Image 1 (cartoon, helix red, strand yellow):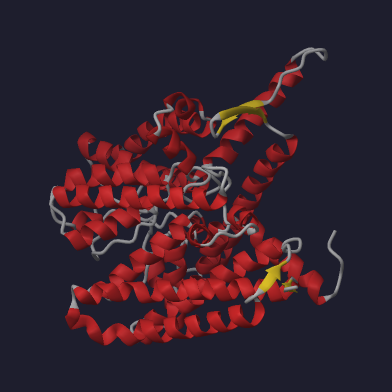
Image 2 (cartoon, rainbow, N blue to C red):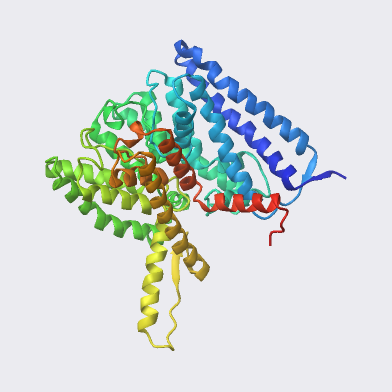
Amino acid sequence: MKKLASGYRLVFGYLGIFLVFISIITFLPLVMLIFYPNESSVWWNFVVPGGASLLVGLLLYFVLLFKRDRARLGKHQDEVILVSLWILAILICSLPFVLSGKMTFTEAVFETTSGFATIGLTRFTMWDSHVFIFYRSLLLFFGGVGLVLIITSALSDRYGLRLYIAEGHNDKLMPNLTKSARLILGIYILYIFLGTVAFILSGMSAFDAINHSIAAIATGGFSSLPGGLMAAGGNATANQIICCVLMLLGGTNFLIHLFLITGKFKRVFKDLEIRFFGVLSCIMIPLFVVSFLVGPSGFSFGESLSYGVFTYISSITTSGFTNVPATYAFGVTSTVGTTFLVIMMCIIGGGMGSTAGGAKQYRVALAFKAFHWNLRERSASKNMFYPKRVYRCGQSRIAEQGEISEAYGYILLYIVTLFTGTFLVMVFGGGHFSFGECAFEFANALSSTGMSCGLTTQANNAMLWTMTLGMFAGRLEIIPIYYMFYRIGHDIFRKEID
């Protein structure tokens, strides 16, 4: 009879498997050496941390899990694994930046977290290295679709569902978890391929095309050029349109993509998130356009329309790309209205189960509907009963009170975290930055949007660590981090968990 792996033996055994996967991430950018052999001197920056991660991972797996049956994970141990996996991935994958000698440890962790969390805020300066530029895009790729989802697509694990859900994947496309993960990954790669081809046809170079396609579909915002998307070659208008389409695809629940691909359009247009997005767009796009039109920069109506629509899509999908001239710095020379609108869109964010961040459109839409239901019940007679029905993920169902409470609670927690982070950034900034600048920057970090008013490039280490923690908490949606500390704390003090 096989021995049983349980408790922290199981936790560290799983982390061993994940370390092997993390090593693959650090090895992959070396593929660029085939096309740019003159950059071969950087190979050891990736091989050293990747090799160490591979050896430690294999050691943990063979010592703790090999030829053992696996028990069920204890309560909240899935959150312990999830948060530990993301911390290990960030720390290990930051080492190539450190070993390059071009970044401090703080900057490297900030950059890596920004990549995995698909933020786009950056301290990157190595624009002459195709290997490192592609590496940043790979961080967006794996972080956008989810580390657990990638692993689940490669490994069949009957206990993987809890990790899958804890990472933010609330919808399965197929009954089988592994097949769902592979289908999502397949859709994700297909969009990147189509986006790359479209960018090339618009006149962009192949290298810039694949990097911008990954960044747009991952709603990440990293560019392969110091001047961003607008510095890429080809037709600028076509590039912006392609980018908008990819950002919208990335910010939409993958189950909606499946309905679109299979022609089930009624399910798409009846979905609560899609309807909420449609109503929100009708209200917010004109406001964005007007905010540019009446601003101090004197934009024409055509320019304001272009900047307004693009900025709205980039904000609501938490992508961080911008087509606004560099001289127009958000939060500094822009109107208060534009800055406020961007922050508001960052808070709302993209769809549940998408690559986007923020509080998520479904939670906000459900909160509004719950408010409407409450008003309706107060004005109706006591004998009337109104079902709290929502159309979500292809089916109509009754919204449970616990789900409604969770939506309200998370939005409140999100806003509290936003104000706390803003306050800390202001304090660590020593009064050199205004409340608006700090709120704009931290909102973009927490929501994984990545637009900047210039604060990131001037930030000291304390400010960078504050925003790094904000990016990390926002990507994992805060709650798993609480449960991790809750579980570890109880284990340390040997308290039973109900």
